[in-house]
Image (tube, rainbow, N blue to C red; front, side, top):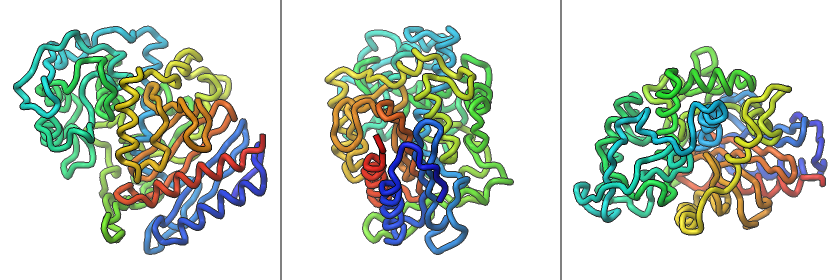
Length: 409
């Protein structure tokens, strides 16, 4: 345990540790690393082991697959381009992504792929950044032809075959109709992967090299990227996807020779990052500090405000909330925030212990990262248990419940 207790009560910090320890001792979550910070002070807990059958202890420098908690971080690449006027919110993306020109839109979400109407307007940068460009992972449409085509074309992660390289990925995406008119509905995930292709086309660099040059490097995020190099692979635990019926641990991804052991063909902005609690703390602390880190400006203050302000209409919010409320075992309240900014959830109502204005996101690999402007608080909790079962989600929920009790106003 390392701590300087700044801004937190000793009793509250003990409670955080006790609750995390209880989850690990249950045998359902082999290990966890958590960080909470206020101002320049941090408190870190590393509990348990990297494997369910023992192995090395979890450490502060353990590297985790960040899954969808990649989304708030990779968005920074687009914000840098907006700050520099290399992108504008209402630019047409077909300037750089001609594969997405002349879109057609399904008449019905569950209809045949050739039953379409022309898009009412082209897709804009704003549509991509707000996850409203017309395609996404829609749990209400599972089994439909369009969702089948998304899976068959390898356009999402977590399939047996890895995603193709970016140009081929975009070519395949361009063969599909949109599910909804551009700007009409908030839809999950695919826009975050499209963001990386857009950034690469605009900059002429790979998505990762631009992120490293403009975000990871300046923030000192030395352990963050889209793969783990060989000299660090022993710091990456196996990722488990327990059996939903029995809870038996199944390895979804090994460390050595696993998906993250070499650079991917597709660096996915939606869920491809690996990182550590300290790297992510640097990023979210920069956002709380208005875009500045160590005296160096990474993003403008208006860019940060745009990212962390709710962008959804009431109708879009209803669809956004369905993702959480129809998957309650995944969210345990964490998914039920109300709003969405650029790349992250934004709380618009008080549904649990966290206040309005808190922003961040959770990941299907058992990760959670949020910042709270009201309390100047960053919280990060990382596990190696995927959300095929609710165990890591329960741990995440209990982490936040105890973190807010530990805040010493």
